[in-house]
Every structure is written in C-alpha cells, then in structure tokens.
Picture (cartoon, rainbow, N blue to C red):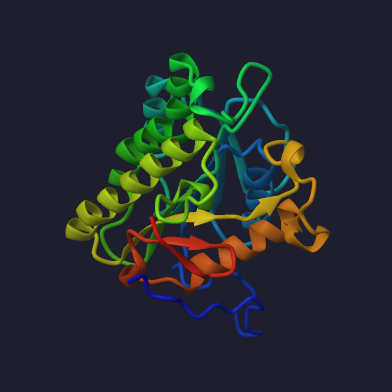
Amino acid sequence: MPQEPEIAMSPGASNPWILSSLERPARAVVVGASGGIGSAVTDLLASEGFDTVHALSRSEVSRSLAGVQEGRIDIEREATIAAAAEQLADGAPLRFILVATGLLHDTALQPEKTYRNLDPEHLLRSFRINAIGPALVGKHMLPLVPKTGKSVFAVLSARVGSIEDNRLGGWYGYRASKAALNQFVRTFAIELGRQRPEALCIALHPGTVDTALSHPFQAGIDADKVFSPESSAQRLLAVTNSLTAAHSGQFFAWDGQPLRF
C-alpha cells in the first residue's frame, strides 16, 4: 500500500521555503517550463533559494526573474534532451527535477471516445510526449543527481492513468501513455534507490488545473475544484517537500493522497 505523507501547506517561520527539505546550495530543473503548471512552478522555484532554476521548454519564454536560466528542449527529440543534460553537468548539486510536459489534445489530436477512434499515429504521438520523452529526461538527467542527500525527480502524471481507477473508459491514448509513464517512474525508483538511497522518484497528479490542456473539459466541474496554475504549483511542491525516499516509486495527488498505479 502507498504510504500517505504528512503535508505542511504553510512553511514554518524559521524557513520560508516550501522545499525546505532539500539541502542548499542546489539547482532545480523544470522541463516544460512554458506550460501553465511548468511556468508557475518555475516562478515559485525562483524564490526557493536555488542557485539556478533551469527553465527548459520547446517554446521560448522570456523571463526576467533572477536566478532563472532558460534553455531549449524538445521532448520528442532525444538529442536535445542529451544536450540540455550536458549543459547541466557543472554547478551546484541538481536536487530538483520536474517534468511538466503532457499532451491530451491539440488541433490534430482529440481524446478517443471509443476504440473505433484509435489511430496509430495519434497513439504514437501520445506515447512520445507523455511517456517516452519524460523517460529520456530521466535517462540523461538522473545520473546528474547527487549520491547523498534528498533529491527529487518528479513527473506530472494523471489520475486517469491509473489502471485500477479506470471506471469510465475512453481517452485511450492519454490513459495508456500516462500508465506507461507511471511504470517508468516505478522502475526508475528501484534502480535509483540502489545508487542514491535518499533520492525520491515520484509521479504527481495535479488535479484539474486551469490550463489549455483542461479548458475543453472543465464544463460540469465545480469552480472550487479547478485550480489556478499558481495554486497547483504550491500544492505540488508542498506534497513533494513532505515525501522521503520511503515514498519513492509512488503516485500522489495534489492533496497528498496516494494513488494506485
């Protein structure tokens, strides 16, 4: 059974950082920093006492925040992931990595309502962005994580990727690719734990966040259950801060609730 963490949403007065459990000096990386959640996490990390926050994305986003260094990465091209990792090799310990990329729909792809809508190219694209890309980030960036002290490798997953929780069907490509992502996280955690026993490798479900990904699907959802990107970022970091290596390889919701893969 997954272990349920104790979450402190309000940092103590002695340390104003949400990520107070991570040693400093340290650096942080956000992959997908141009998206709604990724952007909000990047902005919040800028005030978290990191030497540098590396904001990586496919799209160029101009930020003037002190300590934030932007870079380009294409989650569908391993060469760009490898190049980004190479540039991260030197500096303060890399203690926080978040992969905040994801694809549910765009102008060419919509969630499948029935198996009759399955399209091999659309499925491949879902897997490239939602599962394979984040896995390749792990391949190239996990070796940079320090061997001692707490560090975090986190990916944004989704409750609909839980096989056991699937009661409604549909959304075949998104569900399956997020389930694959969850399996990568579990397997990474096992290997990572052998070499870096204090490291944490987790999947996070942010809930319904007011971003382009969820906009077409917010009808019928209570307004208080749709979070702003800023609120989501705070909650996700608070959950992460409360976890230890004992939670590695698990899946947690925005409120700290353990979810089944």
